[in-house]
Amino acid sequence: MTRVAAVQLAPVLGDLPGNLERAADAVASAARDGARLVVLPELATSGYVFASVEEARDLALPADDPRLAALARAAGEAVVVVGFAEAAADGRLHNSAALLDASGVRAVYRKAHLWDREKLVFAPGDARPPVVETPVGRVGVMVCFDLEFPEWPRLAALAGADVLAVPTNWPRAAAHAEGQASEVVIAAATARLNRMAVVCADRTGAERGVDWTEGTLIVDADGRLQGRVGPGAGTAWADLDLAASRDKRQTALSDLLGDRRPELYGPLAGR
Amino acid sequence: MTRVAAVQLAPVLGDLPGNLERAADAVASAARDGARLVVLPELATSGYVFASVEEARDLALPADDPRLAALARAAGEAVVVVGFAEAAADGRLHNSAALLDASGVRAVYRKAHLWDREKLVFAPGDARPPVVETPVGRVGVMVCFDLEFPEWPRLAALAGADVLAVPTNWPRAAAHAEGQASEVVIAAATARLNRMAVVCADRTGAERGVDWTEGTLIVDADGRLQGRVGPGAGTAWADLDLAASRDKRQTALSDLLGDRRPELYGPLAGR
Image 1 (cartoon, one colour):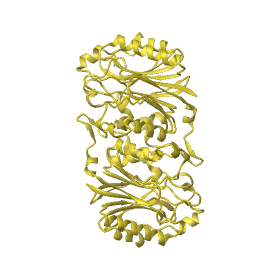
Image 2 (cartoon, one colour):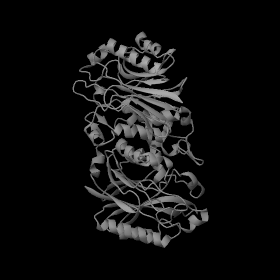
Image 3 (spheres, one colour):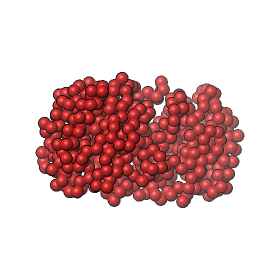
Image 4 (tube, helix red, strand yellow):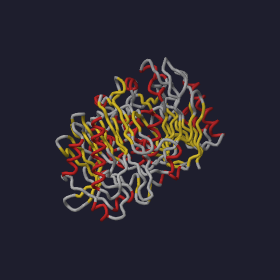
């Protein structure tokens, strides 16, 4: 079993050094408590509700910034996935997530499906979600709204992901008052349909009038909710059998990936 | 608003005339109560747990069989989607669903993703889910396990379906005892991700030792459960705003179909 932690925390908009410290503390604490995989929210180093592109730029880091690698050191032997505002070499900004381990930054993913006003600040990524071989298994990475395009987690599953790490910032919607947040339903269905664990780290702490779902969760490969946080800061925990993700059979004759009909799926892809 | 009915009934394995009569009664009753769209279970005319191919063949109908068209007449002005064992002209059997209206059989869909031992009885379909322009709107059709391949409802949404009609036979799984059946979670997520109503008609009545989820449900385009039946025979009802399915925007800047990145989805399709 693999101990997984998803940390729901409250970055402070504009406080890059403080956010890095809070992230390092959270990662170190989770690692001390036995986590082998630690997921932090989207844009955990910067905050989310930017007033301007300039504000976001001031809070962005290049992917090779030593301050990101320092998070890996804080994690000890754990694998970390954390969202950050990325300053690309070409001057563009991306809503990115880094996968870190003891050796440093292993992969950087740039959110491909930008939500709402993110489009005014960030450039969308042009690469599919990475799936990285790590000591805990194959970890896929995407960010928040990406998960609402079922093509995207499917691509990660087809690339062999055992677990999908999803830094998120889920703004609270009125509809959530009625029951399970739609994001929770989507995460559970995504896990079940792909037989792939899904770990979403959401944030807390109102920011410029925006509240959050506080929906941090861990779903196993059968689609069962195994860890939640609830309102406020905290950490969701679960011990997951990540090897289970490699067997896509439902019955001796049914296989959730093997029974696909890709020869009929043509209209999903291409320009 | 469009009144929709999903009928959870108990076909009797082997009793083709009786099942046709029960289906006609259910359709006529729902239409009398105001239904404009009526969905019946998978293989409603034959039963499901076949002991042999021969048994299934004896219960199969060609798509142009007048007994199917008779169901349309029973429906009056309502549109009907019903699952049946289809005897194709080439001698093969298909697990099919027919879309009927007052003019007769409008479309026949052959299940493309066969589940478990269905593979020993039926040939898989080789066509994408039809989306039929009807008096109640554009109705997409697929069958049961098809819904567990997110590519398939996505194709129906891209083809313009306002509502997805899904005849099902969901065998009851042990996991269901723990909470919401995974099929319900999947149906809700499918509706929400595609902003498309989803109507699943499940069956009841143990058959050769197989029990059913009895999960008949109607989900609106926001992913909200609007109608259920529960255990036993019965009909789920909902009044749906099917026009809502045509607006895929989440915010002024976000669109659930328009924000797709099909140029990156290549590995999903093709051989």
